[in-house]
Length: 114
Image 1 (cartoon, rainbow, N blue to C red):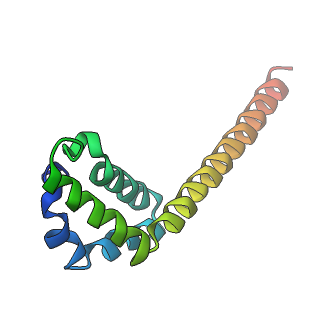
Image 2 (image 1 turned 120 degrees about the horizontal axis):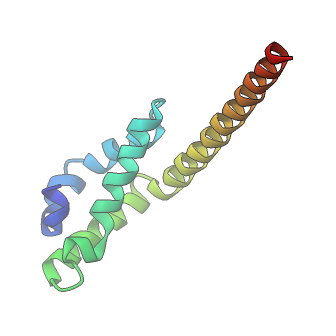
């Protein structure tokens, strides 16, 4: 988004307004789509190549300030790891239930055709 393209504004727009806490709080949202979107936004905001922070000193400072706030103030690293683990568990659960549903359907089809 627009903010990801202007990391020099991260301190004013996210850190000082505690927007980092709000964004990180979305990682714990019960709706996995909301948590996944929060992960995506965090990725966009912290990507030094995509933000131009690799070439611009003020952009780099903004990115560094955001990263510090995420780690120190909002404990983002732990929550991102927990969200990713939750996505993995949910994906396994969906895979298991679709596999068992497929088995039930095959069994049903076999019984009706014989």
